Image (tube, rainbow, N blue to C red):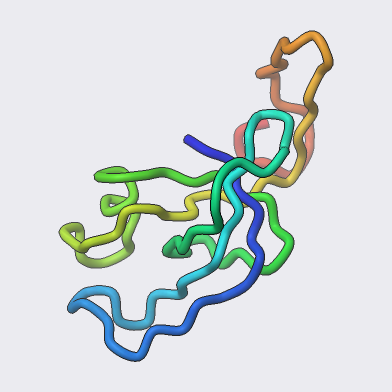
Length: 106
């Protein structure tokens, strides 16, 4: 899984069968410190993200499996989550505990 920040949208006049109605967004890949890594890329959006959103992305076969209808489409990058809260510690440790709140898992 990768982090990415949505920069804008992409428009496509012809789409592969099974990708009609799918929103395409331009994203900037980020490292774990949220610094830009590499060039801008186009990703299929299945979570209704918008410009400026920090998102979780998947590549290759996992991206194709994230599509809502057809599972065999030529999609190489997909946005599968919008990050609501992120804490990056300077020592590099992660806290995997869920805070009490509106999440259905808390």
